[in-house]
Image (cartoon, rainbow, N blue to C red; front, side):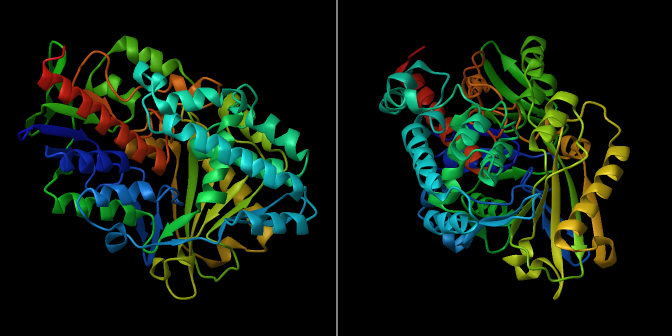
Length: 497
């Protein structure tokens, strides 16, 4: 196909995956990244002797990474060793119940039964989620929903046949409550809505299939921390000749009729035959290729939640797991505050992620690195200094009450990230972690497409477009872009308009 040039804007995990796939096709690939390092939300933070993963904290569907290395005859394990976690998380409920969510469904069912919860319903529930995933993933996650061809293909027909069981017109919470009643399992499975920044009291029950990924396909963690995913992909890309330009801000795009012909930077214009944007698509139409109509339309859609994160280097050795969640007593109130009032409730669910449990070098001997997060609303001008101070008090009190740990007595290092920081550092509009929320039955179809309808050589990857946020979906978006671009390139060679 000759040495055509693809310019990828943004070196997040979706951008890296696109770069690798297109490099394997024989393109010259240039990646422009405004930060000094790759990763986007999958960045790393060093505080003294403590190292923290700043973004995603769990790896599912690792075969999507395997695919990228296999493109070049490499093994992912040589670049990125990972371990399978026995438990996905340890849950602490407001009534004192502690539940270990084992990755193995049989072991998890035994744990649930021992706690006096409805274990008999759990097996059927997980089988239903497995059905949803196996009958819809190829269509909803790995195909473009914005092309008619996807609906007449085998994947589309398979999903349409499963339509009566997709449960799209009930919310996640209604489905979970109808199965588990008022038991702790309802809150546990409602929690999966937060994996794409949504509200379980509004998001379609189809999203309950996320549970299948952890309890059937497995939960994994890189031996060197989550940022090692980025490092491995970048290393492979550089070995294969992908060109990176870091600390390079894209200021705009040059167009001619129905094509993008160049990407503007302070250092000059990068000419390209194809352009793939891995930045927040709303920000793209606001800043890089200004389009008031598209920007207004995207801005009107409800955005996902954000996060308020405390990074604490602590002089202690806890009995906690890698992933831990201290639930609030009123889960619905939390989500009402997030999406309706754009603030935080007085009783919060607190997520604690400790990579030291897998990565010994992430904290000094006898110490732990706590990534402590609460779900936060998008930034709409709140007083984050005041909110952060209040949330810190709530979180410290909850940890002391539930875990009997006085954080301030063992605190050695601390940093805080608010939605404002997330917006500034990652380009995510209003600090929303996943672009738009999935709080409607048609959310999957309303997510922005992976291609431009106006410019025939412009594509989009990453968490703000189809199929959504999170590592697996960003990798899926890269696969979709790869297939779309190849189809277009073949059409161009045949002279198809």
